[in-house]
Length: 97
Image 1 (spheres, rainbow, N blue to C red):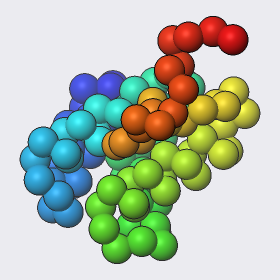
Image 2 (image 1 turned 45 degrees about the horizontal axis):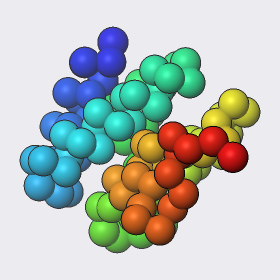
Image 3 (image 1 turned 135 degrees about the vertical axis):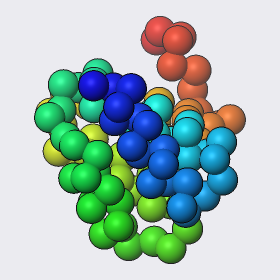
């Protein structure tokens, strides 16, 4: 399912951004769906993506990931699924306290 989901999302995202970014975003979003066992179709995800309150692709995509994470009880950190990831100022997630 993940490959088909990723392929469908990448094709749709390519209409809004370059192919590399579209493929990366699609893979990250498909991984989120699989990792958190969400029963979401490409169509449902794309509908929500279109509802994003932002105009540019990166912000729309990251908004979608944030919205999905907020409604997923077990997701406490969605940065791994966002386009910017953890960012250069973030703590290293592989380091324990």
